[in-house]
Amino acid sequence: MVLSHAASDTDASHSTFASPYVRTSLPRFKMPGNSIPNEAAYQIMHDELMLDGNSRLNLASFLTTWMEPECDKLIMASINKNYVEKHAYPITTELQNRCVNMIANLFNAPLGETETAVGVGTVGSSEAIMLAGLAFKRKWQNKRKEKGKPFDKPNIVTGANVHEVCWEKFARYFEVELKEVKLSEGYYVMDPEKAVEMVDENTICVAAILGSTLNGEFEDVKLLNDLLVLKNKETGWDTPIHVDAASGGFIAPFLYPELEWDFRLPLVKSINVSGHKYGLVYEGIGWVVWRTKEDLPEELIFHVNYLGVDQPTFTLNFSKGSSQVIAQYYQLIRLGHEGYRNVMENCRENMIVLREGLEKTEKFNIISKDEGVPLVAFSLKDSSSHTEFEISDMLRRYGWIVPAYTMPPNAQHITVLRVVIREDFSRTLAERLVIDIEKVMRELDELPSRVVHKISLGEEKSEANGDKLRVTVKKSDMETPREIINDWKKLVPDRKKTNGIC
Image (cartoon, rainbow, N blue to C red; front, side, top):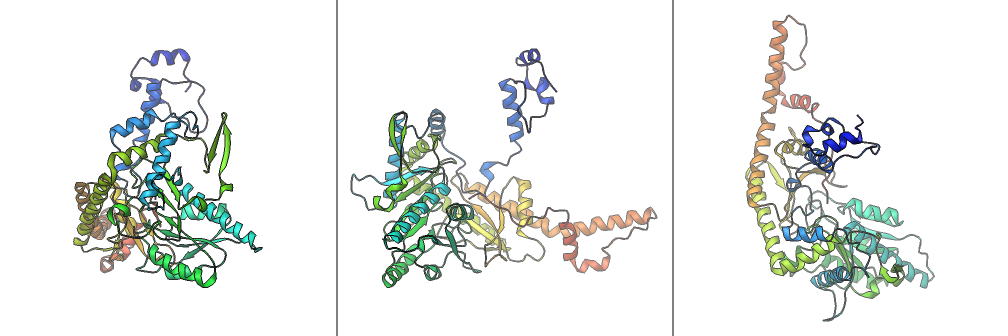
């Protein structure tokens, strides 16, 4: 339907729902030829976006879904500032440097009272991991070149529980072999002893995870450090450690301050953390900090003459908005240690409420640990009749987005559901989720009788009509409800894995 300019001008003063625009499908492939009023564009797009899930009820995601209105104002006021134009926006650059300093100090970097930390803001932990990995690769290559040894086969050792997208991308894009320590049933994080066994002279670093996306568990970075120190002494190597603290970096310092996982350990050379997870900032901000300047090779830092000013940069991106950096600084000064500690304690308490509620149903095994990221990972004790994927599907009817997924090798036969507890997930919501899970379980338990009843009605109707239709399920088959359930499952989409955003 093509609207004339005259019609557009006339309709612009009328209600959107009284205009022709609601009778026209939105373009899918080509830009439209004519303009439409701003009110109509907003309303039509707004209405279609209503079909998205509710982000606050998206319990698959670790990412922040709520911030204070005052911070929202700061975000909107700075949304048009280009992060890289340091000469034009020097205060924004200063705020980024302050964030780096605060985070490095939070992670116990060996800095003097007024010494500037080494680090950078990124669009998330994926970019941060790639920057840290590049620094390790370049340092390893330089050392191999100095000794006249081959430098074409670098590898990195991780657990199979790492965030696949981040680490596999790094390995594939930058030609580094990814050596994964396989998991086992009941042990869903990297085994430090097995990891150190896999280290060789081509290992650029061992990556430990502070907060597995699978079950929230913290890996034992101190044990890994101690074992690597011994191996380095025996071999003459100096294999370092990178800590992927995307989820746990803003949790451990406040809930477990005595836990040694950061720069207190000598082999930890770099750490990444997601500001948009438990740093409590909206999507689009991560951080990577290095122990010292020597741990970031100078040749990786670019000096760009941009608009007449020399701007050192070490990122995979260039132009981007400043809003998330400003939002991060707001949270750091607004909350301070006290506020972050209170938020994390609230998350932990609400996690316990949810876990205990699920335990009372006596239908689930709890896979997650008490110490770690505040989440609850759980699986069915008996999956012979129903699966975790069915529970995930049926919870969507109540508005909840709860992922179901299989564990990595060698624990892929284990399927779990996972609920991430964020700051805006209150005790009331935790209790409501337990109630809705109990409803779903009752509905699933009643399913065989409902299906049998429906089939029985079909038989009676066929006999009344004199039809010779044969029904595959007979009365004797009621002793094998599994077959009936399998018939019902044909009506449910085959979903082997439901991936949650990490």
